[in-house]
Image 1 (cartoon, each protein chain N blue to C red):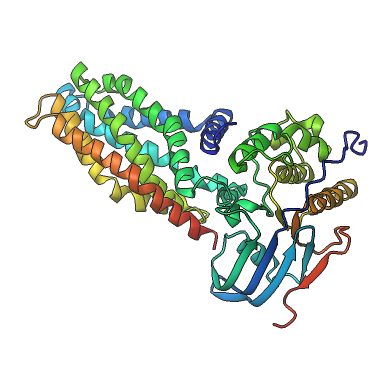
Image 2: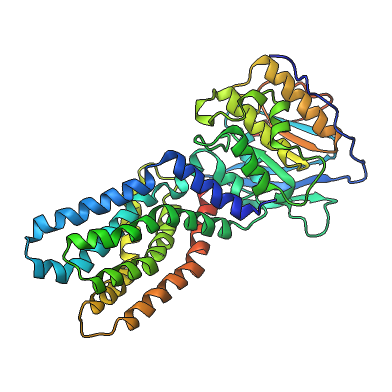
Length: 223
Length: 223
């Protein structure tokens, strides 16, 4: 007998795998964003090396937002969302599990793609490792904060844009500490660990708080 | 299609667990408008209640309120006789207009998921997904993706969901929609068997369901 939450996790992974798309789309969007940046900024290797971590982080942020709007909407449309209320697991945990499955299918591929895309931006080894580490620590927070936006706009037909407007301001702290930790590793004045620790703290706080906010928003969506 | 060759009567459950759904002075609003006010009824194990009324009379609203998906303005909904610590929501199945099925997954995968997600303690009245699909006459389609199925077939899989986890109270919103005559007869038989197992049924419908001595609740008469 599989536990309800594990069943939900495996179902979401299986759906994502069958549909395809979500992981690939995010990574391809990430690739496009990173590759158009040098066209806008110019091919100066020193400049690219310096602002590379910031470009990677902004691209990852937008790519993860792009995939978020279907997080709960698909379940609303096919009626699963109503049935989640009737399960034996609390809705908050179901939300958390859905976020985990979503992160595995979108956030994790972005993180894994980052070091390869970093090479295009003249990043050294230390900087590549730092960007990847910060994305690994920070993308869960992006998914969890985004879940609040996705849950709030779940009943809106064109909620994607509104969701982005709601979520982007909330992700600014993640961006600040993610980028400063990544830049610190490639020779900044601050140490790597101070901003990295705060980044991890933001992710852990999101892990604890966001499921409650998102579940509350979903409870009101049925009215 | 042969008419359920695998049909076998399920072991009769002891009548010992007698439940009673009691609704008192229920008031529910939807979109700021009070749709249901001062509604009360009670339903005992083995009984069925047909909710009728013109479009917009509040049939679906009543079912959603019973399923805990809409907040009550006033009144009480309780299932009496349940074991200590059993939540009301864990005692009911809700069949809405949406079927709660994931299109990329097969019929069997969908049912296995709901069995794991909704199921609690093993109950001998719960059927295996394969067996439940036989009962709705879709055993041959168990490995077909739901996306390939017709509306009526999806509806029958949604009905099979009610069988994979035994829950005493069935809330059915237009259960016959998209069903052909043979499937309606099958649904009538499933409902009769559910009542024989001590279950209760509240169904909102415009059409006769073939339920013997069901009580009727007409909504919207006094408004």
